[in-house]
Image (cartoon, rainbow, N blue to C red; front, side):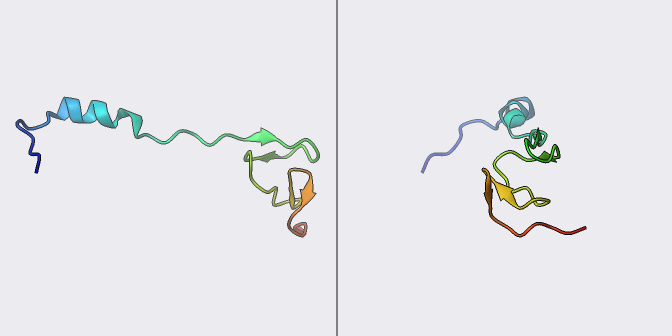
Length: 60
């Protein structure tokens, strides 16, 4: 079994983890309703996904 010869320094450890941060969510403006929504997600207000009715529209 492989065992590290030296302890990983905090600097090296933190540099490796620099890519682990989560990015901010992206939103796009819907073509039909003008509402902001996540790309590749169902629009919960209208129930449309890729121009097709997937869910029944949400009533306010």
